[in-house]
Image (tube, rainbow, N blue to C red):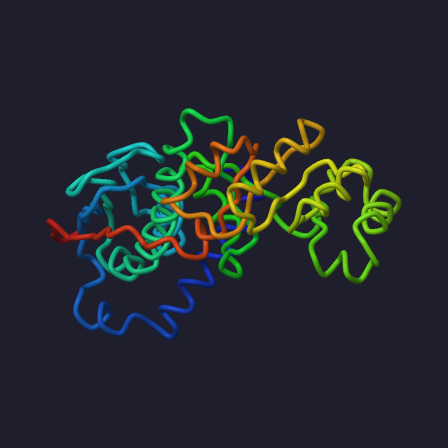
Length: 284
């Protein structure tokens, strides 16, 4: 992890810990002596792809730099029920106080990576790639998009600043696709690609005529997507979006699109079932 990423991660972890701990972990502080050391085992209870091990390590480090995590598998491993992800060694107070925050992060990120990997696996015989969207949990975008990459997907733009995506409301306010693309070419940084959202074949033609670099075919039926691919004929990258599921992603890929964006990767992925148990303890 880069220093910039780590700095942002620490701030996010500190916020999560402050939210959970508040004025103190009254249960642990009441019951567990300061000098008791423990070993906790973090393990999976179902199959999936693990993402977030470095985050777990940072959570415990923020509470107690002496806590040590020994990982049982590399990040991105497909795991089965009972797989040991990490052994956590250190003072028991810190382990217990950080347990829930660490689990919340790794369960959520592993859920995203697992769902992403499932969709990516269906495109093995296709040129299409799975990409995410900006439909992320506020404050967690960097981590959620990281989890998509761990699962084998690719990131779409990170925010409003690193890509031009002209959507229906932009088109309406600009007075049409041609004018919207012209204004973007004139005013946006020249290094940015320009993508246009199209909801019909006539809009696909307009976007092509205007010189769009990418065309998003949004919520189109399969027959219309195929027609759009034939119409574009390699003159722009094609992104399919809207209503993509595990059940239909293979059929969408078979139309010949280049990218398939799936908001559900981040906004609807189910958390992976992961637990942490204390297995032994003793005085420091």
